[in-house]
Length: 210
Image (tube, rainbow, N blue to C red; front, side, top):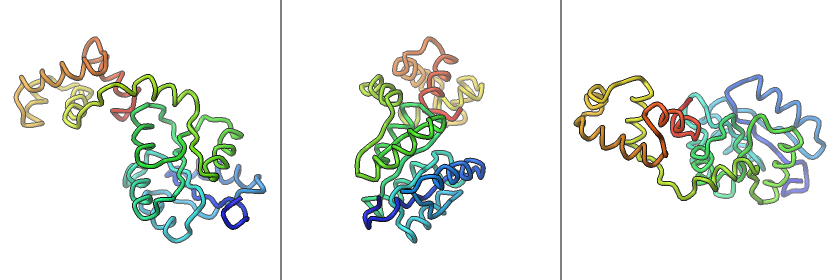
């Protein structure tokens, strides 16, 4: 139940109508849940939250105008008590860590069973956190790792695009030796054997968009 004793009021934020429709159908079958709004962009989410103050918001990470993490940050900067569950296809520990640091109370995969999602909504509404074991395991595995710096991510993005060191250096206005130094650091931090392996690991963990 919500704070006023009525149904838990929900806001869905996802740019795919099919996903929103599926979630709305699930919610409609729960007597203690009520859908009060749907948003397709981060800005719509911020505006709707401000207007309706939902009890729990279901937030996708990939939105057309901003990331879900940025939307969470914006909402919680105005409403620190906002309760948000990230609902995403991306399991990577980096994405999960960013979302939780931004203030998300839950992090669920869209492949999660319906009952798990419904339970998560009720848990988060009570003021508790909800992170499934597989995501928590990913977080704990890498918690002591050094995260890639913003510049290292830029270098790796260019590597993923098939660019040689000279092209990367020109693009980022740095020397080739600096590019090589960044790559050594990247390989060490990710435990990668080579450039291709580093890109693969970075995509899996959420440093790069897949």
